[in-house]
Length: 488
Image (cartoon, rainbow, N blue to C red; front, side, top):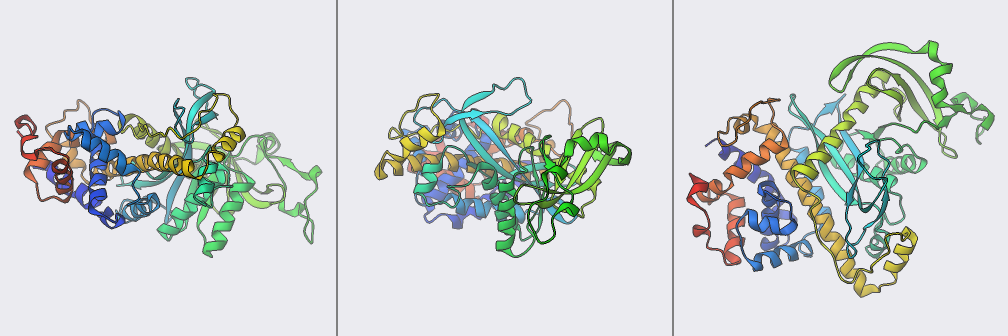
C-alpha cells in the first residue's frame, strides 16, 4: 500500500511530541487535532475535527474544547519541540551555509466581540481587493525554508497574536509586553536562530527596517555572544543615511546637512550602476544595481549595506546588515521572501488554520471605533479573576493556530519526503502534474482518502492508538464506525 509509508512518516513526526505533554490523554487529543486538521473537509472550528474522524459525540466536543484550555501542555514547549523536529528533518534549505528564516505579519478578520485581541487593524497592502481597515487579529509568523532540491516551502515555526494583547502579556509577565510588533517578531526570529545553533539569514518585508528592530537583533546577538541574524529587508522610500566618513571623530551625531536621501541615488549615481545576472523569482534576469554602505538610524547610526535595484521584475532598495555580502546575493535572497506569502495562502485556504472560535463572556465588549489605549484600559480593569479567563481564551486561540502550523508543516514534509507515493496514489486523479513534488493541497487530499483505511488496517500505529483511545473514551464503537467503502 503506497500510503502506508506516508502514514509511518506522519506517525514518526507526531510521536516526537509525546514528551511535551504531562499526561497521555492531552497528547491523544493533540494527535486528534493534528490529524483532524489534515483530513477534515470543512473549516468550522473544533466541530470539523469531530466530524472528520467520526467521533459523533457531544462528549468529544466538550473534551476537545477543554483540551485547548488545558494546563497539561504549554505552547512554548510545543513550539520548541516543533523547531527541533523541523531541524532534524534534513530538508532545511541552506543558502551559503545558512538557514533562511522569513518573518511577516498577517491579518485575520474576526468580528467577534468577546474574543481577546480583536481590534481595528489598518492594512498596508497593494492588493485592491483588501479593505483599508478591518477588525480582527494581527498574527506574527516565523517560518523557515525547506526544500528537497526540486520544490521549496516556507514552513511556519510559530504564529502568535502580536497586537492588542498587551494586558494579557503583562498578566503573564511576558518579556514582550512592552515591545512593538516589529521588534517582537525580530526577537522571535533570533530565538529560532539560537534553537538552530546556526547563523541565519532573516528576510523581512518593507517597513521592518526600524531602530527598534535593529536594536532588538543587536541585543539578542550580544546575549548569545555569537552571530545570529543577517537581516535583509526593504526600506521605505523616504529613508536617509550618512556616509561613514561623516561620523564625527570622538562620537556624536553626523550633521543633518550631510544626510543622503537614499532614493535620490537612482539619479545621482545613475552612471555607477553595475549590470549582472541574478535569479529573480526562479528566473535568470539581467539586473542593474548600485551598492553603498551608509550609516542609518538616528541615535543608532548602524552601518548598513543598501542595494539599489533596477530590473523588469523589481525596482527599489534593499538593505542588509552584512556589509560584506555580495549585492547580487542580497537581491536573490530577498526574492525568496515571497515563499511566506504562498505559505499564508495554504494556511488559510487549504488548511483553514484561522478557523478558531474561542471566546469568553468575561471579555468586555468594545465599540468598533475604540482606540487601542481605551481597549487596553478596559481589559486591565476587569480584575484578576476575569483576566485569567481572558488569557485562557487567548492561549486557546494561539494553541489552535500553533497546531495548525504543525499540521501544515507535516503536509509539507510529507510532500518533500514522499512525492512518489502521493503522485502515484490512484485514489486522487490530477489532469496535470505541475511539479514532481506535490503541493500541500494535493498531499492533504490524498491523506484524506486513506485515513480510514489506515485506522482499520494499522491498529498498532501510534497515532491510530491515540485516535481510537479517544473515540472509545467518548462512547464511539471503533469497530462499527468505519464503513466498508472507506477501506475498500
